Image 1: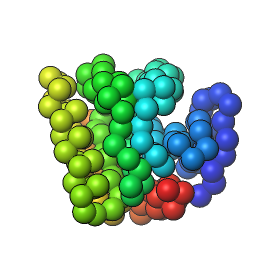
Image 2: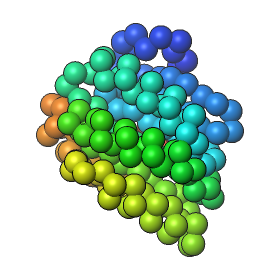
Image 3: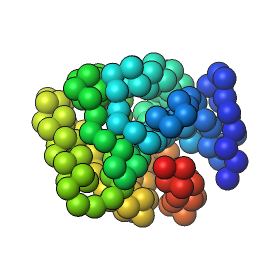
Length: 174
């Protein structure tokens, strides 16, 4: 897979993983086809979620068929700030009709991972709208779940093996 930097989010070849934005040591945001990925190296903050919201707005205009979102959270990244939680809840509400599905991968085990899953559940409960969402501990689980959901809601077929390669490439950066 090729990872390329993109100053503008002009359409790219179908198979390229595009780096949309990165803040070293904090988070990076990527796109591949009509999927938006955010890799969290450390805890989510309000300003970071605001930047992701701006990128999401552009992606939404470029993909009227809909898009899926994948969050990859590093082991011991830290719990999101209250401002980040509020921002994510607003994103969930704002895009519930335009999001094919949301997949969240929480790396790690034990207390921290359990606390992160509890935060995710709490944010989801604040969102009145329903949409397809899964919380996972491994990218293989996402690769098995998301393609069928994505196809049903966007009409875009993903090759599971290729999607898994992308997921593994991104997880390797965490």
